[in-house]
Each structure stands twice: as C-alpha cells, then as structure tokens.
Length: 399
Image 1 (cartoon, rainbow, N blue to C red):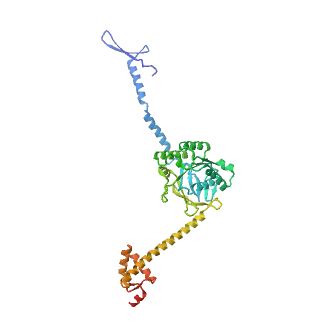
Image 2 (tube, one colour):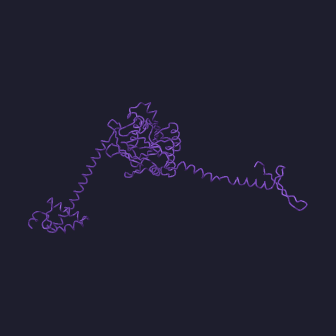
Image 3 (tube, helix red, strand yellow):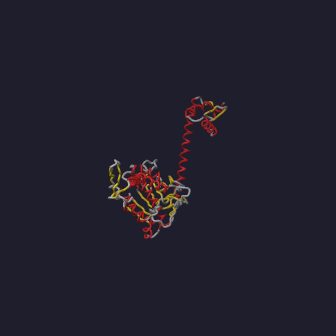
C-alpha cells in the first residue's frame, strides 16, 4: 500500500436519526473503513510472513549441508600422494598427516630425505608423486644454524642448484615466535607461496599446552581447513610420550592429530646402532613399507636398508640363541630334580610316579613331562626298564 495509514483516524458522527457513521480520514481524504482495515491486515500479514532470524539461520545451515553431502553422483578427485615408497602413496594432498618419534630419534633427518625426494623426484626408495612441487617447511624447535642444515643437506643430497632449491623450498626458523602468531604466519605463507606440501616440524609450539583439549581441537580443525582449501599435504611433527614402550603422540594434541591424520609415520633409532627406520604406524589405506637411513663416517645421510636387514638377522639369531639357552636351562632344572628324586628313592622309580612328581613340581601338562622323560631316556641320561626309571645304566642292567 502506498497510502500512509499511520495518521489514520476513525471519526464517529451521530446523525439526526441516531445512526453512527464511521469515517476514515487520511491526509484529508475520506477512506472507506473496510479498505483501511484490509490495508492494515495486509501490512501485519506481510510482517508476520517474514522468516525469523532463527529460521534464516536454519536455512543457511541447510545450504551448507547440501554442499557437504556425498551422493552416488558426487565427483571426488582421486587421491594424490605427495610421496611414494615402493609404489605405496603417502602424505596425500588435501589432508593432514603426522610424523612421530622419541626425542632425537632422527625425525628431521627423515624429513630431509623426503625433501630431497620432492626436490629431485627420488631419494633412495622414497619417490615424489608431484612434479616440481613447492614445499613450505616451518621449524619451531631448532636454532637457526640447525635449521640452515635443512637447506644445506637438501642441496648435498640432491646436487641441485641453490636457485632451484630456494625457488621450490621455503624454510623458516620460528623458534623465537610466540604461539599466538604462528597460525597467522602459516596462513600468510600459504597464501603467498601456494605450496603443495607443508611441513611443521614442532606442531606443539602452535598451542599454549598440548594437553589443552579445546586448543588442540581448534588447531587440528584449522589445519584440516587449510589443507582442504588449498589442496596441500600438511605434515605435522610431534614427539611421542617419554616411556620407551609408549608410542602415542603427546597429550590431547597427539590424540586429535592421530584421529584426523591420513598417514602416521614413526621414526625409531636402533639402540647401539646409527640406523634410523621410518615405518607406518597408521594409515587410512595401504601402509607404507619401512625404509631406513643412517649417517656415513663422513656425516652424510645414506641408505641403510641393507644395514637394517643385517641388524634384523643378527637380532633374530640372538633371540633364537637366548630361547635355546632358556630351554636348555629349563631342561637342566627338570633333569637335576628328577635325578635327585630317583636317587632319594633308592636309585629307581616307576615312570608313573616320576611323572606325577614332576608335573606337580613344575606345574606343566603330563604330556610335557612324558616328552621330557622320553628325551632323557633317548639321550641315555635316564634309563628305563619295564616302566621303571633308573638314574644309571648299571642299576637298569641289574634288573
């Protein structure tokens, strides 16, 4: 309605016959009262028909969810791994990943091999799945001189020119930066450099405490958003708990990262040896085969798969030897006790009685003791005649 009914007035006039006439006056014009009421009702109805803010918000959520729905007709780009080992892909683009390990176990060294593979296409058994990718590397733990070694060692491993490496690899030493700035720095660098792979060596520095559940959830949520939005592989490095037999990443941050990561790799250093082995502790798809590296006498990073194989064979042999020694010790203990029982019984004892004594003493099955006695008789350590066991051959022959 174009007429302004804000000044609408109803005037009641009584005529000579006592009748009342209703008149509406609008800007000096007489308006039919029924028309005025209808106009007011239309305005009120239009206002009532407008969606509330809550309804508008629900509708917006519906539109958002529709974009996230996956149907049979939904087209999803194939997974694109940043790296491969023996044909098995890892560190897929558009996802976050983890590299874990104990302190000083070779995580950064393993990452240098990955960088070398990305820069030149292959390093040892690690192969790049990308063509001349751009890699962003943020180090939040090491001093500047050690961070410089990331670039220096990558140059040494690849033999590429400094110009090429500087163009495709950006490394930043952020140990002195406050955690409140790190996420802003990360977003800025991603927007400017447009990397396909991002490595955060020391993701724990992005939060005030790795045991703050709310901060951990928010950080992982933000990293997932960045990896999907820019279709990059986000590789986060985090220490495992201090106990030797605990291979879980630290705190709520480690729990959230393990839950969301597409790939979790672990670095371990062999005790008494310089071999660093990288294995896949968790993967949404096929697990990466193990690979190993070490430092040569010249201080260079070299392939160590052969050395690891030798170590494994040596350990298997040592384990077998220890098992044999333990079995022999157990057999000796049983034999010494059996001989003592036989001699205390006058030099002989029925096989049934000896079996019962040994079963009770060593708390094993009768079949185990039966095999033990048979073995000792076959080895002529014990002697048997007519189901009687003797401690010496002379006594057995006497009967």
